[in-house]
Image 1 (cartoon, rainbow, N blue to C red):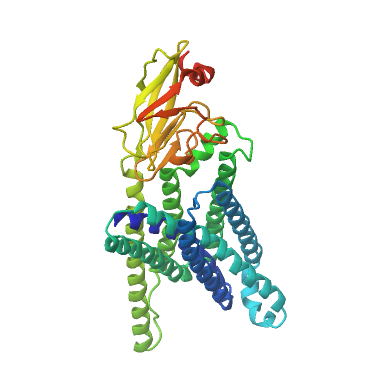
Image 2 (tube, helix red, strand yellow; image 1 turned 135 degrees about the vertical axis):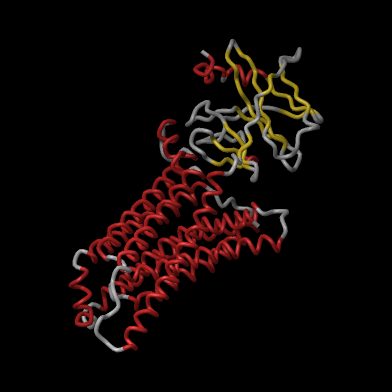
Length: 431
């Protein structure tokens, strides 16, 4: 249940934040008539997310396919940046636009149609990637857990993100408009940069973009689960604190000195509703921050086994018994070649076959890999690239370098020639 809650909340909060900013902007600038285009994009993305998730599961396509992920992230970054540019241009003369809106409605139909299509496409690309990932990751991460509890956790996570968006939009109607545009523009730009960084990282993983280990480390740090959770939590808190600050300042206003009793009762009723809204927003934000913070404070979800030393047979081979190896669990070993400790990986796959590779890659070098405890993937320690366990040893990009091996019954045999030829890669670590 908790796993489902965290997954749906995390994926949903970014969507809620962006949609909340756009819908608030439209309402404050007298363009609420365009809201339905945002909702259409949202509905279309959610529908295709469900269909896409089912299709990916049926055909077995990895949702973290680097080319697919990188392309969707790049498209998302472009549309976020274009939306920021549109908001910035529109906000420069926002007061004049709001005053003259009715007079211009009959003359800017073409511009409105263009903005409407842009809103729909923008919403679609922002939601569809998160939606597909949510469906597939939820199915994978909760495999074997209670179906009812998974549904409850997932629904609660989506509901919490939706409630946050509603309260965010409701509260932003009374804030300082200029400061709102400044803060939310910065937030959207940060999200655009994050998407662009993710796109570059995905393409670099497969070697489509030349990249150094140092730059990959920086990119990976920005995209790591804990760093990403901290960033998203901060982006949520900033506009909420802004709303609360403006609300507190408005509380200093006094009820109308002149006017009827009915007007004063109406004022007090409005103040009570605003207080209820504020309390709801604070409570919802607290729950969201606690849920997101639990991911940061939780113990490491990674398994990093200590490399075990191996011995060489008379045939100059390394023989390892695999009978006791749990399927899907990463095994690490170390072989001494000319004074250098050469680390290598081995894993028994679910179908009984074996995968072997060096504990190094051509981009990030000899930093090595660890394993996600909850999913069948290896994680690069340098750039946080996820590598499906069943692809170990295929090489290329951030995939571990290939290492030849063969099976003799239940014994894994690794010729030492392959290790000897790659010993120079590990020299910097031991000398």
